[in-house]
Length: 310
Image: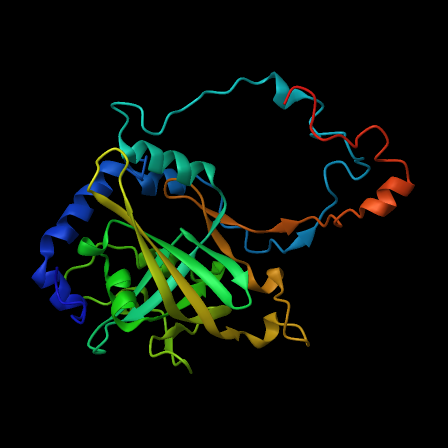
């Protein structure tokens, strides 16, 4: 295993096979289903620039406890297909494509790191990212592959113990996507994307100045996972990062500095394949209070230890 203090360039020179293998794996995934994407994109409507964030009602505003789905029972008429993720002959990439198309929309952690010696920097998007706690603020980042063939971000993160997590917004979606390019050895994604590095307070890695919301983070732990289908093969790493400083653009934060306006943030999410999603509208549903619902009679006949048929 290469020295963990190496910068990106040295890491790749020391073990280029890992990067070549990942390039081959990307071709195997066949993420882009279009033989001529430019032609397909040209046939689609233009970006809806004037679309503004707005609220709508829920589909069934008068919904009551016990009423179930709001589709009139239509979903109950549909059949399901059972899939064993470890079925003999089922490629692991099938599970990958299934999960990234079914667990949507996913937030994208736009992660900035630098090598421990500061000789190189890296910027890359990760849709296996989420917040898992608020005190302390904790975030998870999932990496494909094991530590022995770690991508630049994971190598830098485990060596320096620092990173920034930036939330991708609509106004730099193309630049963010560009950082997923299979660039030549020693090339920083910052330059290829045209994005602007900004200084941090608690970590040395840069945050993305164009980002409306950024988090300075310090690594707490990593957990490596082993394949069920191929015992001994390391297939993933989970990193837990503690947020130690937040950065929010002035026009996006409220006076108490505890709420970010989704209409300003305009976050971009990850869907399956090469698809991204926009968050353009929302609906509000108050959390029900049991005492109030009981008083109104909505709980009558519903208080059971389990539902019939379970």
